[in-house]
Amino acid sequence: MNAIKIELEIVKLVNDLNLEGDFLVGRLDGKLFATNLQTILEEYSRNGIVIIDFAGVELMDGSFSDEVFGMLAAARGRNQVELPAYVLRSLNSVSLDNLEQALLSRPVREPGLRNCVVVVLFENKLSLVGKIEDHVKQTFELLNECGELNTKVVSEKLELSIGAASTRLKVLFDLGLAVRNEIRDEQGKQFVYFRLM
Image 1: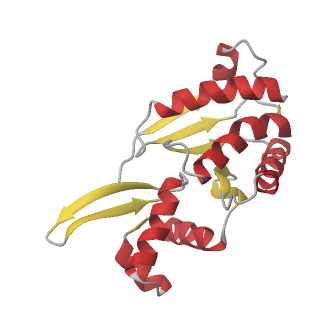
Image 2 (image 1 turned 30 degrees about the horizontal axis):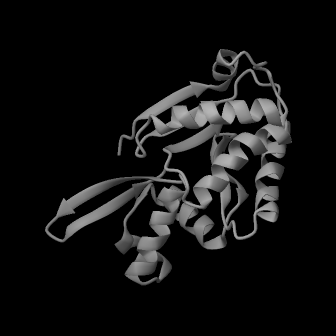
């Protein structure tokens, strides 16, 4: 699948709001940026992939991370928003640690939140950052290994019922961890799911 990939430079987006681009700190700035970013993401197709590039950002602190990516991941984990898949790229290790702590702390503060996760491209590898259920992680890893999956393949490889395999793949899509295409053939309608990169 050739999903449409859109690249957004976070420094430019932040500067457009008259915020400091190289230091992303604080809840107030995070809340302002989160509203803007969500509006931008909602403009794109759910079958597209948005790359959010952090080049030029020296620090993203935990408060900013929580207000932006913690909020979006929690809303997505509760099926409250429909956004395209997005991948964070060029995060330095300190900002990545701050992001991870923010995402891990959300479910503690929001009981019942089972998945609060974002995809990060770090050292040329797609990684999941945040809280994620084991079965979601297993399916994500299988998708990244295979490149594309459908319900039948997941059912066979993981020894699951067709219903369980279908649910697993839909969860990946809903969490923004995969993109999908609808295919119609002699067997009817089915979805084929693809890794993000």
